[in-house]
Length: 164
Length: 277
Image 1 (cartoon, chains in turn green, blue):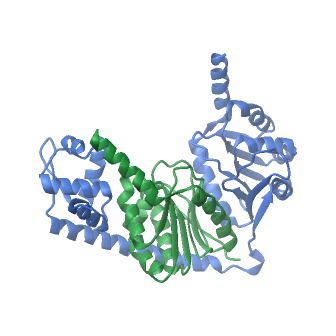
Image 2 (cartoon, chains in turn green, brown):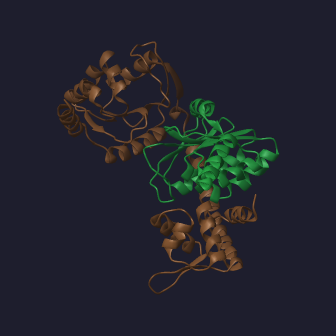
Image 3 (cartoon, one colour):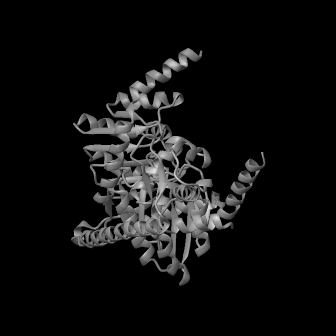
């Protein structure tokens, strides 16, 4: 059975995310904190995900949606990513492709990730490990709020503030 | 969507964050400014504005003046886009290089002799977790763990502590990170008393894992254990993959550095407790 690989930087973690997006054929899920979601976005993940979705792939993702990243979320929604909002504390952040390839990072309290944040991630091609991550993802997904609903709430709050 | 929103959205397509795009757009439309009025116009605070401006300078789309106070001006749109594009292209080339290097590394990792085959196995109950881990502790020299106090209650109730004590007595060592709360002091004290080095982590997020001799590992996500009993459902992953162990150990060491000795935390809680009475 193939072993995994330890990844020691945020940039290398993003490189693995790009590889997962480019090689997956059927489904990709991600659960990322907003800072990592944003960093991944600057490396053309949206453009690279589009052909995957156009060919019938399903991409689902969870992050914390706030006023700061509405536009970033909308860019994903526009290409067909199914996104949800969750502000629960998650123990592991992950990207999993085709129920096999995965990269995961333990949440050890980093407030926000930058390219310089010390990180130790695990890249694996093991389906049992992917299954273990997916069980956690599905729990988070079932408790998360659809992105459109969350964006609507945030926009209403913005209008209410403007009225005051 | 207004033309301003559309413009900002397009700028984000060029690799600026939303904040950076708004700031650049503002400087472009209203001309050079110092950080304070800029922060006020963009409804943010000054330190945040400085971060955004520094990032925009790095991306070559904003220029600071040389005099004091520093005034920030937007670089002409065409030049700025060209500069962003070049930086982005160079980052992408770097990322492609990293991706290829990682692919190569991954290929090398996959060539292992068959007798080193790794196991990944899902454990479904507290009983399965205990029956898998206890025999491993019996033959281990090192046991590192991260778990909430409830796991220490399990260890105490189901006889794991004497096994860990034997590990310590035969010259091995065990270190653990947990969240020391007032009600959990007796369980933490019991583990300290058998010779385990325990620390308290303030930003604990409910992680559960144990690593034995940097090879065997058990780890669990979203464990929702409500009762201290052996048939309690609890899904954990077992593996004997040393690479996975290295991943967990590296994270353990980062947590360890950020945490404080449990004794210190216990004294603090006891002091707060007695002051509260």
